[in-house]
Length: 392
Image (tube, rainbow, N blue to C red):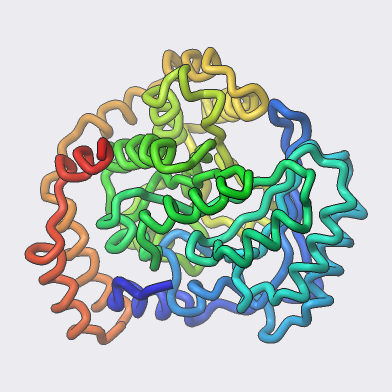
């Protein structure tokens, strides 16, 4: 992990400063969805939190952080308890902490070995973990494969955007996209599948830019080792930059029509390898999400039902039906996505940075001056450059 944007990291630490720690009384969370293979089951287990989150973290993310120094046995037992109460037998089993399964600082080796032992008892056709790309070392990948020598394995990496500029100045990812490509190649050498998680609704981007970035990122991921892409329309969560921007009128809720448009542009030739996730909230506690992606009250139930159908089948005919769906909110979205922003992305980012520094009292003027030079002189950005890079 490398802090490529000290100003945005300082902002994120300020945003998170009042966040309460998660309680050990809720050591795991599970969700179940029907997918083409059968039942997809995801188990999240409590840790002290994502290592990158502790340094500021990504602008959209908040999976929370538990008490410091959670014991390895606690993590192992959380996964064991979750597996014991699953309502269905999983065809695909995903086990993940808040940040990265292969991050020794978040999930110590002893905890990971115990969790792997619990996963090994599952009859799932596919076992998955999620981690940051820079934690996928040769040693960790060897351990993962050696533990399950005859099982189908995969890793999900949070790519978010394949634009280094957007990753640095909008997501604050703390990792270059090229690291994804290196991790994917290392995983493939061990016959481990690779999934790339891609955001829709990244901070500071217009609706059109967000769709273009997600589509370009998906194509880049396919060209650089990703066998599957998972599109994530972003929720607005507490203690995130998205929440701060939304309350200031600088960030609208993500429209599910943007998700539909991304799927439409990626086409029928890719639908078998483009999944969707978290297009709705699965939490029973409403406080977990401030706002979720939406359309309008009139069509939302129908749109979500069709999204569920696509999640279960990955049938492009569902996307064609959604793309042709008639609703006033769909027309409003079309007008928004066709509109030209009144200023360039770097100009909008800088204005937002200046607002955040004043609004939050970050007191990071030196870092802001430095990032201003990078935005306009050292690391200029245009979508023409990004699209050319996508073809490389």
